[in-house]
Image (tube, rainbow, N blue to C red; front, side, top):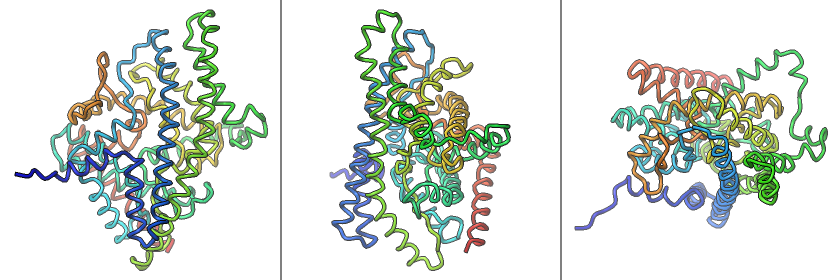
Length: 461
């Protein structure tokens, strides 16, 4: 008797190919279906794949070099942080290996079409890889409640809220970043920091003198010359972290080659990421333009559409790089001294770049303001991660994927570049901790945002 694979196994196999293989296949098929010549669609898909490969290589370069240095620091200073940083790849793998992940893409695409038809969104979310965020939230809820219904409910609520946030921020995003006309960012991790950016930015503007600190990344270059270059800042930060792992003057002298190597490596990451993200833009632009034109033809009256894309398109912005690198040593220090925190970010450090794509349009690239917003967001994020680690660890253990587990000696595992997001933390606790009352509140919030978006869209028509 032939045992045919289940839908869950098919999805798990496809997702197991990884973003570098899965995304070119998806975008090649998508491009052909929407009318692009096969050769052009294939080239676009391959450029996206090359972008993911390059981004993976560069981020792995960062974490593989910073990881040992930071681990050396924790051992040198006898730090007790029992929650292990698994990083977002572990979460993504688990997300798509669960019952929720097997159906999350068609379910969310169905919700997207329904919202387009009802006029509650103008974003067409083709950032299929990042649907894992919704799937992992659903997986945590499923393993906590045992209910697939609640799991999909939580995932759909987060999806609706994220689509609305993508619409709310689309105009500012498109006006701030170059070559991003018709693009929005429906990624829940990025959008979770938008409320912080608005609220903290409003407060900072009312501090006497702070509003005059209007320095962007280009301003840093002009004001400080080489000292303001992201490349040079990366070298300095890398060397600084290398020095901190040395316990004595003699060890410091002996480690000079390793320290310099770490500095150059971090500087290289700062320089290479913008070049790699240019590949994403080149590959995704034809798909974006063709998708937008097709949807507007098929759905009469749907003008002003935005195509939902990965934030990887813009993480190479100089302000993002500068603020991210400046925040790394600060957040590492704070993770050690903050009472109640049990999580030291290591593997997640490369994901810090994704905090800022939707923040920069609000701060207009102001480095001091963006730094403060990032700092407050990450401090709160450390407590979100510490709080969600039991649920995160439960999902990891229940999925039972070979090679993905909390190492011996640690009490749990999580990832800063998922669990620190306000939306994921809030919706999990609303649906799991507060049960029916919280679930109703989460649903009301999603419907309220959809209603506000509907009115906004009608007025703009």
